[in-house]
Structures are given as structure tokens and as C-alpha cells.
Length: 76
Image (cartoon, rainbow, N blue to C red):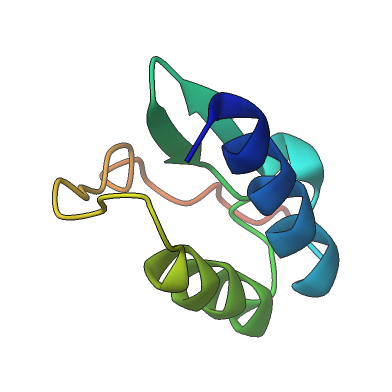
């Protein structure tokens, strides 16, 4: 899969899952998925499922980075 094909796939995933395209980035061949913390669960789940279905892209090295950050506190 070429870089252009990967970028196109990420655009299609973002559109079909109603995510921002900026949530999915390709950096040095690795996909970075960083949705807004307030994003709907269903949209994030959709994005992850579609990423797992990508053909021609090895996702065996998948990891979660940044999920250790605390959620923002709500203001009363």
C-alpha cells in the first residue's frame, strides 16, 4: 500500500465514522489516531474497527499512547 493509498484510506475512515480527518495522521509509516477526549464512543469504536480492517497495512505494532492523561475536570 502506497503512502497516497494510506492517506486516502484514512480520509475514508474519518468520513465514514464522522471523525475529524485531523484525528488520523500518518507519520513515518505509522498511523496516529488521536480523537478528541469528548468524542462519542461509537465514532472512536468505528474508527478503530476500520483501522483494523485496513488491507496492506500491518497493525500488529498497535499501541495506545496518551491515554494516561487525566480527563479534564468539569466546572460547576
